[in-house]
Image (tube, rainbow, N blue to C red):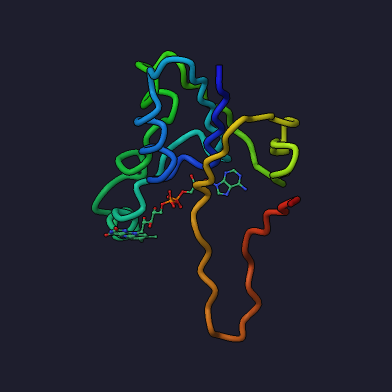
Length: 124
Ligand SMILES: Cc1cc2nc3c(=O)[nH]c(=O)nc-3n(C[C@H](O)[C@H](O)[C@H](O)COP(=O)(O)OP(=O)(O)OC[C@H]3O[C@@H](n4cnc5c(N)ncnc54)[C@H](O)[C@@H]3O)c2cc1C
């Protein structure tokens, strides 16, 4: 049984999981800091009161309830050890055979204002 870890439940993570869902000899685990998938392209609709937040955020566990081989963990990922194949997240360590990284991107502004962005530590 191969253990596949999907880090992030954005567009990349969801699509990867759907491809791997219900496949034989594969155990898929998805980790995200949130328990929902956020449909970012419609964020502006929420900002302008055209939609409610619940209309663009979908519970990840519900999306994958029909897939027997997918489990979902909620937690912040702090580091990835590529050599020994595990990630450390807020509830501990998770070992994998294959890792799919779908944790999104950061925007770095050219302004000189103080920036705040995610730093993931990779151990190569
Ligand atoms: C306002 C807006 C409008 C957009 N409109 C369009 C559009 O019209 N068309 C289009 O093609 N694209 C659009 N995009 C871009 C599109 O939404 C992104 O390209 C896409 O969401 C990227 O998908 P992803 O899976 O790479 O990452 P994301 O969707 O960003 O998902 C990353 C996931 O990783 C999780 N994560 C990140 N870090 C951690 C961590 N340390 N621990 C645990 N979990 C973590 C996050 O919670 C998130 O669920 C838009 C984006 C925005 C913000």
